[in-house]
Length: 250
Image (cartoon, rainbow, N blue to C red; front, side, top):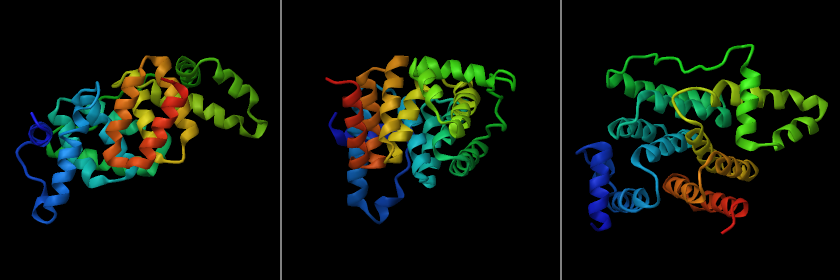
């Protein structure tokens, strides 16, 4: 198949038989968009449709491009993602975007779920309790990043140690331990989120190493960042790829 045929096939898999509204007003632009995203990027690398749609959801959430988020929530369901996987991907964004932007995205996802008769709330995925969220979070943190965590905690100024505690108990305890997505998927999505933010190259490098530590190889990281390209543009994509190459040289 050529890229036009590929884009048509992929679009139908994701969105059904509908035609993008932009064809009525901006057909040239829509052709370029469709052929690049659905005829080229979607076929590059080693990720399946489910992984790609999870990445798309978190990048659109990061960008706060909510109309497109709603469309891709439908697409995520169409390619077989479970509602809990979609929700957990969106929840993961809260660590890096904050709660207000994440709530915006949750509202869009909930509208799609209601339209498709998916009962809410979904089953709880909490895996920790108040008395163990710090310890379990710290254990996940060490699993991802290794001995650097103890050094980071020990070197934190006294008036900033609470931030390190929040990282362990809130970020990794309350969120990374949740069910619905495995650790490799959460860490890959995190890389895509921080890459999409722009200006967070230090965190991008840390999560490149974290991805490597949990078993996501360089090809997977390059494919994931490439998949972000149509949604975040070349500057942030190239910055993220530079981080990958610095941490995992050819």
